[in-house]
Image 1: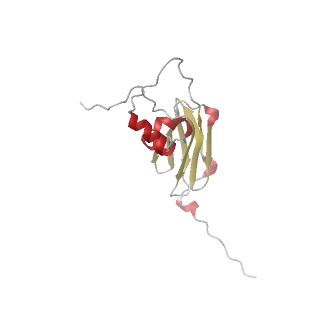
Image 2: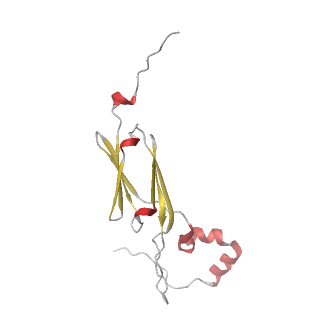
Image 3: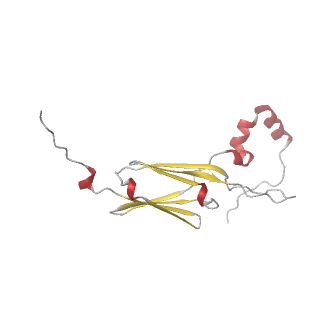
Length: 150
């Protein structure tokens, strides 16, 4: 069985503390993401699948309130953004592991086929945002224009 080594408490050596002071916060962010987890933007995971008539996008947004989710649709782009508020911390406790990201999030997805932006529907249930995007049928994607003469 494989195990993941997790550091508990403040067991940084003297050398680690000297490096932190010498190099500064920028390098610490690279090696210790929990140090600034509350300040960064996170990207929610998504699944995208397609049928003959529509594209469906499912985004995992656990812990995000319905009113804190924003959705923008254009003919070739879907933008999901918002904010997940941090839960209050338990008093007199030390975090042993902090993997859940809080704060602002954004996901921009490019669509490779034309869609009907007016027919899009979205539902949010149990932390999952489902966006159903109807495709424009090939015969409607291209319009024939009559050229008039003067």
